[in-house]
Length: 248
Ligand SMILES: [Zn+2]
Image (cartoon, rainbow, N blue to C red):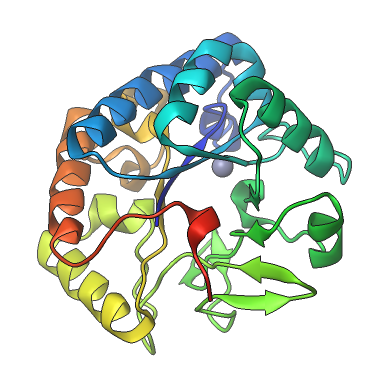
């Protein structure tokens, strides 16, 4: 399961820089176009967790995305959240994409009560990264594999058993290729699936934003090449599916 968090590029704000909304949207929109091209060349399925705010600004791009990708919700706004946004974002995304939306991923993997996600009409939630990373994720003892809670299917981001070597965008960007290969095979062998994710803005040149080096490393073309390499590798080990089609 390969997914993308299609959102406003608001990470510079996290690091104390201002960036207006039009630029936040355009950086992500440009990255999304590059991803769509790559996905098309590989003929693979993927899931796009999209914010309603991005979709409202990029209606025709989201319509194009929905031809080949599953559209899921990444909330209404990337930078703030209210419980009503669960339902409101789903409605907006369904209206624009013409697809039924089954999945939810909360921005920055913040916690949302399971029953509220279910009551808003979602079938699955993918809002956990079960790893420890200083200053970002502190969930080393969280559920590592898919589980059902309060009728909601939860699909955490993949990490290896025991050591919990992460396999999300920051890891794929910074780890040596042999380690990504090793960790991916270990997860596939142990869990039977992989759940990995990226952001469109990783495929843009974002060096000018003065973000930490581990965020900007290999951005743009280099990251596109790396994703291309990773997709080729994973194609040898299985099949890409929409997250809505995963069954526990
Ligand atoms: Zn996000």
